[in-house]
Image 1 (cartoon, one colour):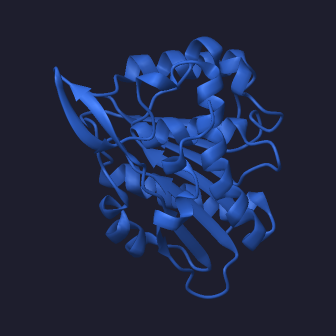
Image 2 (cartoon, one colour; image 1 turned 180 degrees about the vertical axis):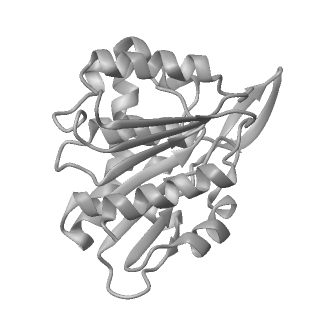
Image 3 (cartoon, one colour; image 1 turned 90 degrees about the vertical axis):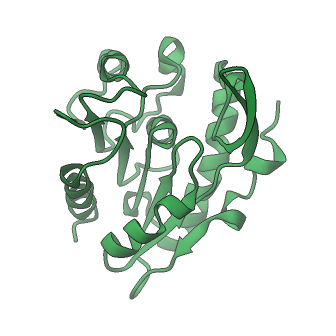
Length: 226
């Protein structure tokens, strides 16, 4: 199965916050299920680092069944993406975004990919799979480790080196922390140990708190050496 037409050329429907100053770095941020780039325009306009372009792609709309009723919602993947081959095809569509930024900044260590919820899960998967060069960093907020039973198929030679920030609310009732922790333990078993920073915040549900936002900003500054 090829990547669907709606998942190709994601840059065409992305919201772009152009760099202030010379474009040296890029951040790609993937929104969560049912959301869009609109949910992050204001936030990244406020926290945009200098010399950094921010790419906020939009997932295609899909018919999703929730409690027996169909809804037309933006989603990076649905039930059909359970097998590893479809997962790799999904990753390829995001890799095209990274490759596009790589042409502009010339060095993958100047690119960070991140996201929230479903977007965080996909960012983590893409980040440990990207194999052209080592990325600057990966941020997974309120997400899970996808394809737990097949995760070894997704790990690239850079997976154990790329800096990864995992932020999660301890009281998240949508993506349970225990499920995410199980996935992270699997990543450790596959060699990802010293490069993952995990922050679990008490009293936080399926959201990013002020503390979480501060952690994201500090992570970006550190990895881009700003």
